Length: 220
Ligand code: ADP
Ligand code: AMP
Image (cartoon, rainbow, N blue to C red; front, side, top):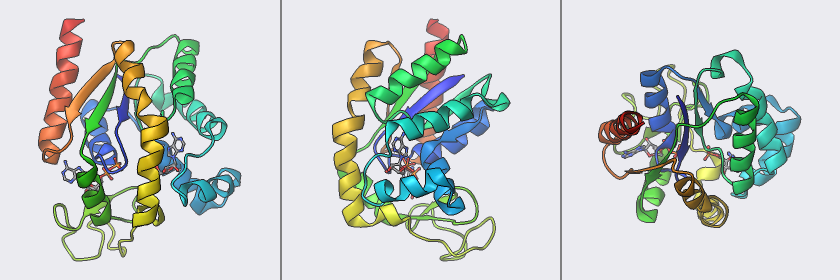
């Protein structure tokens, strides 16, 4: 299955992406994760990236599209994938289509997690991540670690992402409205859009996504 997970920052894409990719046995391809890894590695992509992510802006299309193109060419992504946080512009959406046409494949669905702005702010201010385990994320109130402040998997001290600070979050929400929200219409027009209420508890959101995907598959 070839899926896109859409939604504003804090909608639960990473959380659902992890669960869905385990259930569906496909790799999760998160541009946010790949960009953060590049920043830590200090490579050319990382150096070009940080000044955009720190200001809540999108990294230029050319950089992100190239990263995704390379990732989708890897063997494990040939029979399916879930894209988390990509596309974020119409240009990027057109690029995915082109990559898939080259591979003689097509998307199965674009799943949009719908959440209110108040919930986004609440979730992001409570988000803590492990710097060591790729993208293990916690919510201080609703999904806290077993030992306060430490990762359940490796015990590392949890941190707040630089771009989860309040003023950057405001910029990221503006960026989402301006550049990413048009993708809802883009995928609706193509008959690929699946919208799910992302405000409900994690397991209920997962169940609605899986049910919606099964319904689509049944409908042909
Ligand atoms: P995104 O990848 O879309 O930015 P995350 O998956 O990192 O979002 O989720 C943002 C925060 O909200 C995290 O702290 C996560 O634990 C929490 N979260 C995710 N899904 C839910 C949910 N359905 N209900 C409550 N909190 C959630
Ligand atoms: P995320 O982890 O998905 O919230 O992404 C964190 C940040 O990485 C975003 O605020 C952007 O600055 C950058 N980023 C992630 N994915 C993309 C993308 N598809 N296009 C441009 N920038 C991206």
